[in-house]
Length: 115
Length: 114
Image (tube, rainbow over all chains, first blue to last red; front, side, top):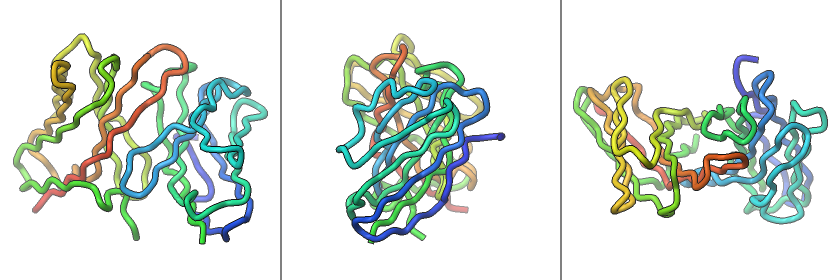
C-alpha cells in the first residue's frame, strides 16, 4: 500500500477483554515499530521487529502485551485482560532499513478505549 | 472528538507570522533529533531532522536550531499557514545505529489564527 495502515481505527472494549490491533507496513519495509500514545503525551516505544523477530521488546509494559509478525510483513499487537489504563492510541511505523527509525513512516494509529 | 493535543501547551500565532516552537531534551548523549507534526487522528509526520554535530538546518519554510550546551531544540516555521495547525513533537535518538529508539517530548499545540 501507499502508507502504513492500521486497523481498526477505533476499538472500544470492556475491561478484562482481549484485543488485537493490526498493522500493515509499507510494502518491502523490513523494520516495524509499535508505539503507544496516551492522551496529551508523546508516543512511547513498545517493540521493534526486524523481519519476523522482535529485536527489542523492552518497551512492552508487562506480560499482558505481546506482538507478532509471523511472515515479516503484517504485525499484530495483542493485549490480554485489558485495563482502563491501556486506553491510548497505538501507533505503528515501518522503515525500509532495519533499525533506522529515523526513516520510519507512521500509520494513523488505533485508538483503544477500555471501558 | 478528543485531540492528541488535549492538555498540551498551546502556541497561538497569526496567519502569516513566523512561529517558534521550543523543546528541551533530556539526554546529553542524544546524537540525532527530529521534529514531527501530528494532526488530529493521524500519526506523527516527519518535518525535519538535525544531527548533533550541526547547530542549524533549513528546509522548506522550516528551520531547526540545536543548542547542545543547554539541550534545547527549536523549530521555526516561516509565514505560518492554517495548515500548520497541529501538535508538534521533538524526538531524540541516543544511538542512530541499529535498534535505535525515538524518545518523544511532550508536544506543543500550534494554533494558527486566520
